Length: 467
Ligand SMILES: [Zn+2]
Image (spheres, rainbow, N blue to C red):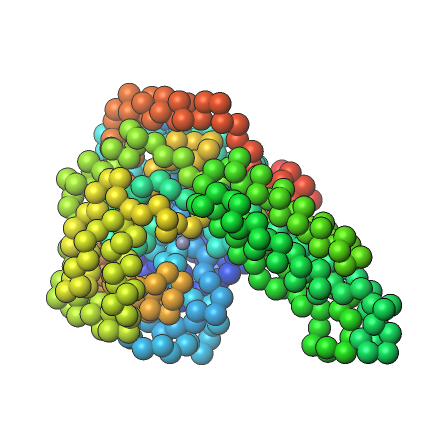
């Protein structure tokens, strides 16, 4: 059933690759997703969570609700031609699909369509949904969708991500918050009347010093990064009256994150006090850490094991070798290390399945799927779609996004997701087991959405025309 719809969805993935759109601006990508859902007979709901570039398609009746989550946002500054192993930006866009979200969305929808076929042909009750989730890259759209109740009646959520290897995720991701600190001082001539000026840039520098001293006294798994959004101007002879620094704070657990964010806010206040400036902060985005689900992970792994790794051919491996020639041996070794695998430097493309519980918890990022996993039992897999060692968010990853290997890896992941969902529909006791595991893991851990109630996505007029 997956293979029957494979060509349509591979073509859609290529079209999404061709029109790389940044977070909350995915108008063409979401339109394409809506068309495909309608063409495949799904009931389409638009504007999910009040976000114009989010969509949901549903098929089937009654029974449990199983959601398959997709994404389609691209990254800035990663423009790249497809199918070549040299860096060459395209003429028509500055953006690129450097995280493989063109495949992520199309593969997830492919799985949902096959599950719809499975429900129909077996005459089973149940509703399968495809959620088109925009703005994963720094946008936390799923967190806003959770807040709006978009997943409230969902029993199980399934997703995947393109990767160098195929396997079921070891569910580690860091909770994170992105905040901007706006400092306001007083401009003055930096030489003739420096005593009249109060430098917002000084405050930012002192804040960063304070944060760097905090590093030693935070959990060793936590992360702190900052970027200067506004350094106050280009003239050194003007005391900078305004400066903004953006912080990304990450921690293993939500409660650790909340504590760290409060400490960083205190450091900002301290810097303002020292410099006689004022400071205001704005939360930009936030994701919860991932909560795993043992019954779902075991089920998905059984399906993956039964299917085996994706089957690549010599042409796929040849191109992957060309890509690997642009990488360092260190890149390739690091890719194996991240998945807890012994390095095999002569293997350009995945030919095996990484075992459960593998993976190195020190090398993890964040995902807004984490927020969903606090409200719905959630499982994810990695699908092998690119050369081993390809760095995330790189031109090499963009270049491989339309290759036959990417299509094969996407169809392969769709089969595993579809088989997982189908088994859940066929055996409702598995859904009950997933829910029991979820309840046990959530017990005594209150869910606090890391996106505060008064923070909205960067969409003009958001919330004004709420249904
Ligand atoms: Zn991604």
